[in-house]
Amino acid sequence: MANQLDPQNNTLPDATSVPLDRIDLSDPRLYSQHRWPEYFRRVRDEDPVHFLEDSPFGPFWSITRFEDIVAVDTNHEVFSAEPFIMIGDPEPDLPLENFIAMDPPKHDVQRAAVQPVVAPRNLSAMEGLIRERIGVILDNLPLNESFDWVSRVSVELTSQMLATIFDFPYEDRHKLPYWSDIATGAPELSGGTADKEERNAALQDMAETFSKMWFQKAALREAGHEPTFDLISLMEANADTRDMINRPAEFLGNLGLLIVGGNDTTRNSITGSVLAMNMFPGELEKLKHNPDLIPSMVSEIIRWQTPLSYMRRIAKSDFNLNGKLIKKGDKVVMWYISGNRDERVIDNPDKVIIDRPRVRQHLSFGMGIHRCMGNRLGEMQLRITWEEILKRFDNIEVLKQPERVHSNFVNGYVNMQVKVIPKAS
Amino acid sequence: MIELTFIEHNGEVHNVRAAPGTNLMQAALDNNVPGIDADCGGSCACGTCHVFIDTSWMDKAGKPSESECAMLEMTPEKNEMSRLACQITVETPLNGLVVKLPEFQM
Image (cartoon, rainbow over the protein chains, first blue to last red):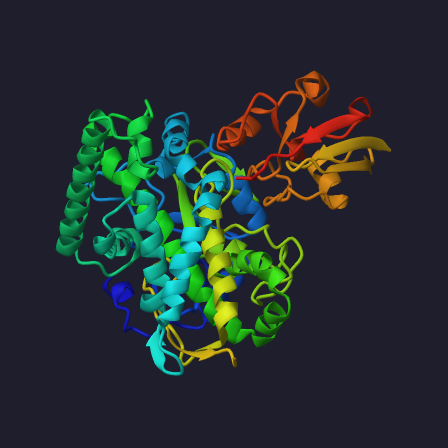
């Protein structure tokens, strides 16, 4: 385990030289060193429903092909999302409960309470504001000199958006991605590098901040103010979630879920889109000649990036999948990152092809009742970002290989140095 | 062939002909009817082929399965006419069916 957690340990062997039954797809170095493609390719070909007896996260099944992932993700009778959807189990001293890790019927009512804030009808009302904010961020970038795209653009943009849908104090918005990163960054959950004490302090700060916001909003409502349209107000307005403040594990868990859901995902897809346009310059040319391809390009990037690598389930009964017997109680990890590279379903899956047929048919949002709730918000942020980029810039040059997140859950970037080349006017 | 009418949210009408045995989602895609995303390709797993079927056609279109109901619960635009187009098989009794499309897919 100590070995696995050291991001500096660069001794990952060639995927073909590891005995098949020892391949550990939970090793976070596969992601921080971007070695996962070759490992998953081998497992998809040779042992697509793959059991690992011993890992830092205990024994677990890896589901690696597209069709098998859909079969598991849509079968919530057999495969439970409870108690948690990351590969490691949360600490018992810090209980968090949220609807992504609940089965019906509890899942259904809690999700329904907050779904409206990101429903397409409401998003179209937010489009102008999002465009304006993205425009300001892009207009303030230095031209023709090196800077970090992750912090200057991707993090800034997603924090602003989260602050908007939470009605969170704008000047404190940087706390949101910080809480998100540290929540998923625990070594025991994702193989990440978050310090336990720092993490507990951050989650405590998050709990206190949101409780305060909850009571402030409740007081304003009682004083006769019109409720604002944000996640906390929606939860307070809904009979099923109105008293959630009295269930601290659920309260903190659901707000944490919405922060993580709206943060890493979009942030890393935005960074990934810039990297992809550098790796596949022909696709950038296609996009410049035909900006109508932006929505299709957005779906292709979300597939190619797969910003969350997996979701996990627990089998509630024995189940035969593709010739393997998954036993009741077994841990099952659906590797979306691998299904999205499954050659059986997607042609040339490692390539970004922005006008690919059936481009929306990818696994990044999951399938079934836990399918991503904010998918349309994420797509919209990426679409507007690229609409505004194409108005201003000729190219965003990636200057060196990006630094990647050391986690088996968040497939993303810590830092990516770029240089922005403005359009010739 | 079976005749179907799709009406977009903006009122635009698409009259299409489909072979029996296909599903309503595929019939829309094959005839370039906009407004159906079909993100899962017809596995009842994404909810992005949401359509409205007039209640008078509901019996002929068949009852939604438990999993279809679960997916429909997730869309804020759901009403008593809601179905997922991928779960409706196009058969002779549906000849003349009118299908309305929502403003947004989820």
